[in-house]
Length: 209
Image (cartoon, rainbow, N blue to C red; front, top):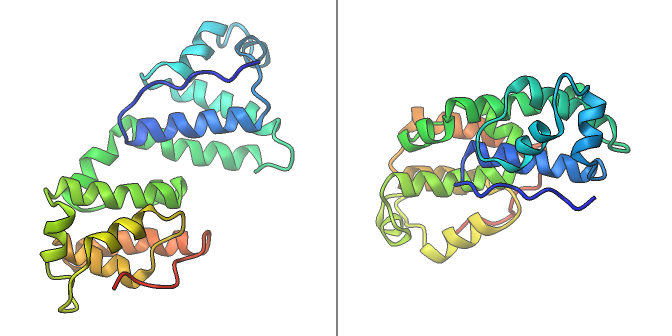
């Protein structure tokens, strides 16, 4: 069947959860909502309820997400074990339920360390961009701030580094966080996320100069 249309949502944990659910649906071969409802049990979830979980911006219940993820993951050839996917999605759902993105990134810390690590490199870079925005800093203002080394981060270098698909280097991250005004305690949680992701994706070889 044609893929289901994802809802229009602002960046944040709710959108990340929706994006990952649609990605899992694609990897499972895009089963229809009726097929999914039958697999889950029509008394558990009607086709319309399954459809809403994929297409409405409101957060679906964890019970429904858990069943959908468990079934979809079991259909992915060579995919991650279903229970591993359930655990990953639970972290995403918890983040969406508590709106952890707006509550923590705006304050300059990442209480959702495991959440960001579960999301991956792309969302980590998005969170870094959002940190700067929430600190009320333009790229030009960031370039004028002390990066902790006595140097400055050029706007073009920051933009390029955070738009690449790879994980920023640790040295860039420390300079960027310092320029955003984060002290060592606030930086430690971001560095913890970086360390978790470092073994999952290649880091950039060169720092922004």
